[in-house]
Amino acid sequence: MVDNPLRDPRDRRLPRIAGPCSLILFGVTGDLAKKKLIPAVYDLANRGLLPPGFALVGFARQDFGKQAFSKMIKQAAKDGARTPWSETVWKQLAAGIRFVPGEFDDDDAWERLGKTMEELDRQQGTGGNHAFYLSIPPSLFPVVVSQIKKHGLAESSQGWRRVVIEKPFGHDLATAQELNTIVADVFPSQSVFRIDHYLGKETVQNILAFRFANGMFEPIWNNHYVDHVQITMAEDIGIGSRAGYYDGIGAARDVIQNHLLQLMALIAMEEPVSFNAKSLRIEKQKILANARTPARIDLHSAHAQYDGGWAGGEKVLGYLEEQGIPQTSTTETYAAMRIDISTRRWAGVPFYLRTGKRLGRRVTELAVIFKRAPHQPFSKHDVEELGQNALVMRIQPDEGVTLRFGAKVPGTTMEIRDVNMDFAYGGAFVESSPEAYERLILDVLLGDPPLFPHREEVELSWEILDPVIEHWSKQKTIDTYPSGTWGPESADKMLARDGRVWRRP
Image 1 (cartoon, one colour):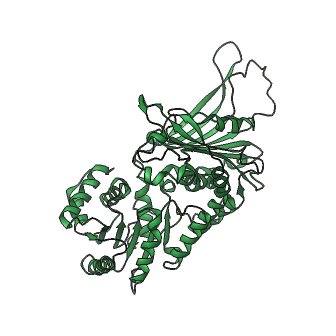
Image 2: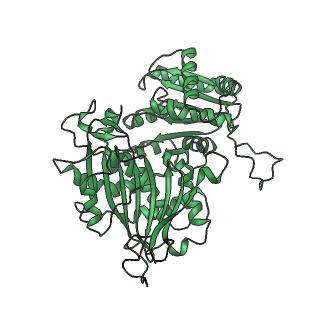
Image 3: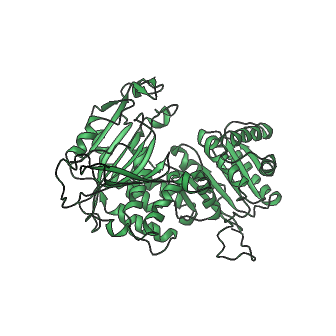
């Protein structure tokens, strides 16, 4: 970050701007890079958050040539940009775009990358500041990190070096620890950024603001008033072209291990002493260290695959009918589980996590369900339509907060029914929310790590999930559910055993 000596630190109108640096993108031809990362870089530049001395380096097997590569990058930026297109901004970005072709085990390619970085230091003034973004399959992380070390690209007499790793962080606890050891051998912990794009969403960050900037919620944010918490991430699409990646990974590893357990930690954590990376990390780690599934995993978890059916008015294939999926696959596309947190605040309050593909609609939400009033002076018929009070934070697609409570229906009789009080981001704020990757990439370039999971958080998450996956792996068959529904019957029974039901998002 470049400090402006004329700026008053109390002035919140001017955003922080990254200093001269480069982003070296491995897997630049992949879907993530073209659909998310490149548009995010353009939008940051268009918002004036990248310096003139910024460079983007693509590393990929296919040899495009500089002209064809620039054309591909420009098209990707145009197709995915959130902000209006500006040729002026693009020309400034294009001056710093470079491409290095080669295989990950090709030493000559890594030598070319090193020379390209030195060239950018001279021509673009990047000053030895380079971030390596690993937008590649997890199996290739160790190869790339080892090559970075072998060719001395992680070391510099000036500037900084950082590495960005996409989830999933390992396949289980053992592989996560192995990967963390390899990365730690090359980069110090403060230079390692583990991307969880959900943590970059404005509405996820608002969980912290919602909880700790207001005084009205904290007194009831505990087991005296909260009955249970439901965290849902539902998708209405299937696996699409991700068969090679998804089969063998499954819904639990793909979503619960990172996204949902991180959301759970934000909901359950104690107030940090300050809003900095270390304080936030300490409180999240306390929750993850004390979170476990119940002893009877068979009664408190569910997993299933989607069958063919109707979704969005179209007839769709089942998981085993998707291209590239073996008929014997038992990989789950739906996963649900109960998590208990052994702390004074949350003892006795179950957290129910669920995720799935081909469900009723696309939605991610956190619902805090409160206990019923201890005494109601109304007759049974007066409150037939009254449910439990709930505070729902919607992460996507309709970002906002809903408070559900009971109110009297107008009329001569005493009839109480659930009503909603809604706050919508789109209606309350004029400024549109930035894409999550914009925030996260900028944080990497600034060296600001509050929203990135640390090594300990990753390993603690695997400690929670591993016993569940191990239990599922012993089962020779897997449950199914029709596409377009809200999951298998086994998930409904899981909550019914606790006397509860899933909330319909």
